[in-house]
Image 1 (tube, rainbow, N blue to C red):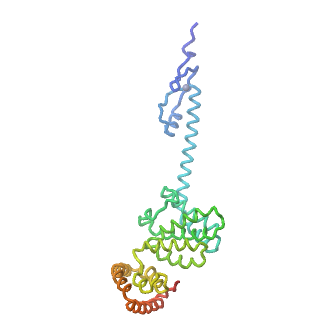
Image 2: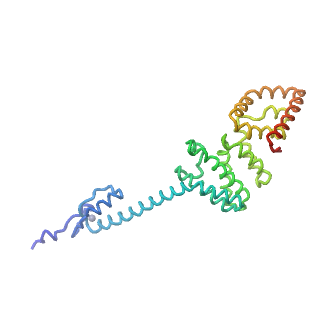
Length: 296
Ligand SMILES: [Zn+2]
């Protein structure tokens, strides 16, 4: 007797193998497969092997999807809470809990980078051009400055790389009109207690160099940019003039006019003497009017 049609061997449309029976793929399963973006054709029935295959594809797909959703949600939470993390960093810094401060700052920078969809080491000021992020530049700058100080005093060799990263990022983020004056002053104050004074100088130099000039006249008159009077003019420029639009204009004029004057000073020792006298008086007056700390 021939086998009845019901028990006839059937071919699975998915794997093309013969099977005694095909299992129906119902609407629910079909939907689930579409949901995980299974892009093969979905037959109406398959062999038991293929059926199992589809089932595990669905559960893996659902797991991955859930993981992705959780990850995205986590990203959003970190992004929303990032400023609190920065705040906690500052609070811990204030009570000298440096390991915690470092941890919170690193988390803050991580949250920030996550929001921009990049790695923390790739944060750059140009990401903050949007007016709603502009104010955050100073927060980022403080984070790098504090990390720079924390890792400067860390005896753990593993933080060497983090120290260098903080230093490089500080150079980038402190080199903006909104952050430079503050960080310059803080760096100059910090230098005395710094472990690695060379690195502080390196950052100071990078920030000074990137300003479009120096105090040409004062430097020419005093013969060195490290004379206390010259330093007073730097502080005046960075902390007082830079705050006002008119002051910024004056600085620009100064950089335009002073190189030829500086050349004259270079040629004449009498002019140099006179300039020194005048600048000394001006420096004393500036220091007392604006209460500038004299620096060396
Ligand atoms: Zn099959």
